[in-house]
Structure formats: C-alpha cells, structure tokens
Length: 276
Ligand code: NDP
Image 1 (tube, helix red, strand yellow):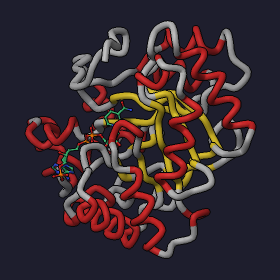
Image 2 (tube, protein in one colour):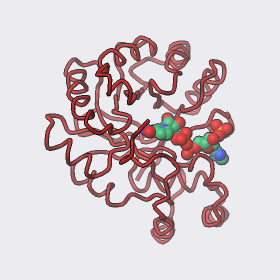
Image 3 (cartoon, rainbow, N blue to C red):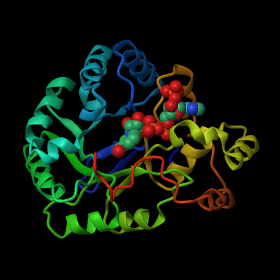
C-alpha cells in the first residue's frame, strides 16, 4: 500500500525510485520550469522526468541546483531520442544531457522509443553507461511485450523500467503482467490522458463518490496497480492536487470498474510504427 509521496519502489538492480513524480514534457519556458520544480519540491516531489526531446534539461538542471535540495535526494530520468539512435550518437547525447542537467549522473536513462533495427545497439551503449556509474538504472520506454522479449534475448542487463502510455482507457494488462514476471517496473506516461481524463463520466462519478477529482482517481488507480506515475502540470494548484493521492484508497470493486474502461485507446503513437 502506497501511503506517502516519499514511498519508493526498489528496482531490479536494488536502487529505489519514487512511485510518484513530475512529468515535464512540453514545458520549455525557463521561468515556468523553475516555478513548477520549486512548487513540486515544496510539496514533496523528488522525481522529475525529462528527455533530450523535451529541450528543457538545462532549465531543469538550473532549477534543481538553485533549489538547494541535495542531488542524492532527487531522482532524475532522461531519455535518448530516436534520431540519436539512428545516427549512433547515444553516448554523445547522453554526455550532453548530463552537461545540461548539470549533474554527474542520471538516476534513470531510457530508450525513448523502440526504433526498429537500432534499439538493441542503443541498449548496449546504455549498458556501458550503466557500468560506468553515470546512470544508476537503465530502462526502456514504449516497449511492447515483443520488443522486450527481443531485447531480453540479446542483452546482459534487464531493463529496470518500461515507461509506457497507461491510463484507464489504455490498461495494458498483458504488458503489466509480463513486466511483473520479468522484474521490470512499469511506469505510466500520460496518466491523465493529457488532461482528457477530467471529462470522462466514470471518472467524474468516482471522483464525487470519493470526494476527490478525476485526476486524483486516475493517479490512485496507477498506484494501486503498483505502476510508477508521473503526471505533468506546470500549474501550482494542479501540482498540489495531483500529489494528494496518498490518503485514500479505491475499493477493489472500483479498481475493477476502472480496469473495465480499457478501450486500447492510444493518445500517443503506436510503438510498432516509430517513423519519427
Ligand atoms: P498527462 O496525462 O500527465 O497530462 C498532462 C496534461 O494534463 C497537461 O495538459 C496538464 O495541463 C493537464 N493536467 C495536469 N494535471 C491536471 C489536473 N489535475 N486536472 C486537469 N488537467 C490536468 O500527460 P503527459 O503527456 O504530459 O505525460 C506525463 C509525463 O510523461 C510527461 O510530462 C513526460 O514527462 C512523460 N511522457 C513520456 C512519453 C514517452 O514517450 N516516454 C510520452 C509522453 C509523456 P497543465 O500543465 O496546464 O496543468
């Protein structure tokens, strides 16, 4: 049972990661990032999710440094983008990320998308980075079961994380079970359906029942499935709202109801068609 924003999951290599963090996609304004990160840190967030693709690592590094919170209390995730995989520039872009983040290491480094024909080579570079101690854990993102099977057959290190689109309308149960069976921790991106969750009738109904908001219901559903979740907001009031999910519990019946909303609905791209 996850009852605090400080609660952590132990990943398959023994390092621990907060169950809950702040997503930072599409926040590219330095002041907005600074305010979001400082608000989040005050509330108790310690995990921050970025990527080279988001073009905000420099601002995140600066905000974290200025916050005065010791680096070892922070859990920082970044990701290698697709063109770097195709151009075999993973090591270079990783070095650039560390420089921008103003840190000697990241806590987690992910392959952003499974670029066909390239992701296995990329993984070898991530393994090298991991051995060097500059990424405390390595993992993947947007990998389906067959991508994971393919990778596991050819690698030394089992990914610590698979970060995928995950919300009640895309309940990836088969993938969740596969990951559990292989000690890979699932992490939800788009847990609020990019904001659309607040318009969904079943979520609104449950929100009324629990005296919560639809966003809080969706995030609590992630946590009760033991899925790490990283909702994005740059609005202070929503950064707070999204973190108020540790003092209530959805009943088994309501978990089941939410599970039943699955429509296989992807708001993001299909990982089998990575042409970008
Ligand atoms: P989310 O599902 O987290 O939704 C974010 C949107 O919802 C924003 O528009 C935000 O607006 C709005 N929002 C936030 N809180 C609330 C609330 N309480 N009520 C109503 N609306 C709200 O989508 P993301 O795509 O951002 O996913 C989360 C994170 O996952 C990303 O930021 C990124 O770090 C990661 N990600 C990873 C991907 C991958 O391929 N690995 C792909 C996409 C995302 P506002 O800011 O105005 O509050």
